[in-house]
Image 1 (tube, protein in one colour):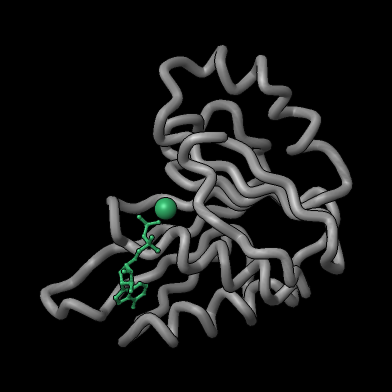
Image 2 (cartoon, protein in one colour):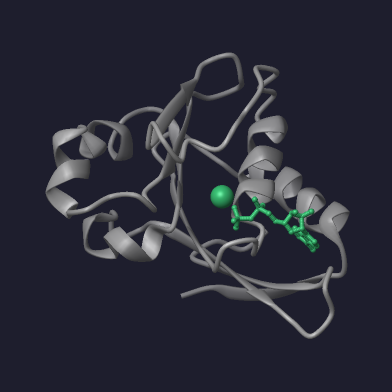
Length: 144
Ligand SMILES: Nc1ncnc2c1ncn2[C@@H]1O[C@H](COP(=O)(O)OP(=O)(O)O)[C@@H](O)[C@H]1O
Ligand SMILES: [Mg+2]
């Protein structure tokens, strides 16, 4: 599996990585984001949306679990599964229709539903460091 580790020294660098990442996306790609609260998952997801050319305002789908955007180069499905109580709940929301559809799915807190992700899902893991604005970002499954 291809794994690449990046050091984002500030929020801007995380955004730039998301923008660059978006250029590689194709229909049906599923991207699982893993990292603690404040690690940068939403920041990255928003940059991916921007990179896909989405101009609608992308906000964290914490309460709705899924938000869909159709004004970019590819359909963009933004999941936040933090509040899920069971995997059944996300199955009932039709997650497989999204994962195996023509759009790109980005899932925050993907570690909660790892077993449901397609085998070829890309994983992006965010870790904070001792430096407030620094993040270690590991991308597994695709080489930028
Ligand atoms: N290098 C960095 N990358 C991403 N966010 C950063 C970075 N440095 C500081 N931050 C801050 O950390 C927070 C990340 O929030 P957010 O993206 O919502 O995290 P999450 O969705 O993982 O909970 C934001 O307030 C952002 O300004
Ligand atoms: Mg978030």
